[in-house]
Structure formats: C-alpha cells, structure tokens
Image (cartoon, rainbow, N blue to C red; front, side):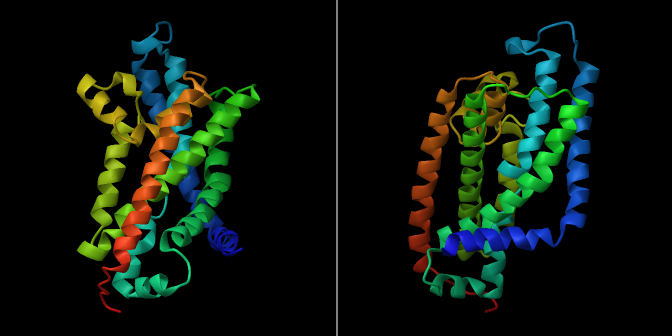
Amino acid sequence: MLFPVLVKKAYARNLQYRSSHAINTVASGIFGLIYVSIWKGIGDPGQAGASGYTLQNVIHYVAFNQICLWITLFITNGLGIERSVRTGQISLDLMRPVHLFYHLMAREWGQVGYQLLYKSVPIYFLYLWLLNLPVPYHAATWLWTVTALVLAAYMNICINYLIGVTALWTTESNWLFWVHFSLSTVLSGFLIPLEWLPDWLQRISRLSFYPYLQYVPTKLYLGMEPPSLLAGSAVWSLGLTVLCLAVTAAVRNKLEVQGG
C-alpha cells in the first residue's frame, strides 16, 4: 500500500498550488498557439509538404505535442535527488525499507497525474475548440495513444532518476537535465516531425529513446503510424529500468553527504 499512498500524497501536495499552476497552463496553451501561428504563416494550406504532411497535419502534430509535454517531459528535475544530496536527506532516503527508485518513481507518478488533469487536459480541450484537433473514433487508437504516453512518462522518470543520481558523484546534476531538455526539443520531434530533420540527425534520433517521448504518441494519436512502434517504447522502458536498478545498487556503495 506504500506506493499508492506516495502517489496520492504527491498529487494532493500539488493541489495546494492549483491557482499558481493555472498560469503555467495558460502560458503553455499560448505557446502552442504561437507555434501553430508560425506554421500557418509559412505553410501553404493547398499543398502537401515533405513526407506527405499537409499544413493541417502539421498544426495537429504541433498541437498534440504541446499537450503531451506536461506528461512526457515536464517533471521534477532529477526527481529532486540533487536537492536531497545537498541537504543530506538522501542518507535517510537510502535507510528507508523501500527501494529508492520505486519510492521516487511513485512520488513522481502523483505529479504526472496532477499535470495530466490540470494542465494537459485543459490544453487538449482548448485545442479541440480553437484548432479543430481531431478526436479518434476508434477505441484502439485511444488505447495505443494512452499506452505510448504512459511508457513515455515512465521513460522520462527513469531518465531523470539517472540524471539525479549522478549528484552522488558530481554534487551538481542540474546541467544534465537541461542538456536532456535541449536534446529532447530536437530529437523527440517536438516542434517538427522527425522526417524533416537532416538524414544524419534522423539516424541519431531513431537510435535513441527520444522519439518515443513525443513523436510516437503523437503519430499514434493522429493515426499516422502503426501500433508496432510501441515495441520500441517497451524495449527502451525495460532497458532504462534495468539501468536504474543497477545504478541504485551502486549508489548504496557510494554515498557522500554534502551539508548533512
């Protein structure tokens, strides 16, 4: 029962700040509309673009990517591990009779759930109204999309856990989060489809986990790719899980408390 309680507590903690978080939601929705306006300004609604995309496809692609951000990318930097190292809290976390990775992951799922309901969902309805975002009529499409989003959120939790635990060796891991964020804006297909990247950058992207954070969920939602892409999400999720567990074992043998 511990992990459901951690999820619930993390969700309840965020509820205390709904009014201030509403500003982020409004700003995120506006940013998405700005991206769409840029594409409307440079696109030709009467012609198909590269890789068969039309202007309407691109608008829907960019809009759904913006909706996904709060689930697949915007989570706690390093799961808060760097701060725990600096305060010495990490020593208590490791003493608890619960695995550190499972503990922090459960807590983060509470935040992801909150951001889904109070950020992604409102932006989704806003774009349904303003951008005529298509709504899938087949239950299978919703199933594949939700599965892709859950796996994407889980992968990002794993990635941020790995970023956070580097603070045990460097005491400063925040820069890694921003490197990850910067790479994601390009390699995940956030602003433009992967097909439009240079060939060499496409190859790098497709060899990484980044397309499974944004590109795959969006393409599945729009019905532009088969659900077989989820196999890649599952493989990366499994690989990152193994890596997180291995790193946690190493962390227990390497603990240097700063300020604790």
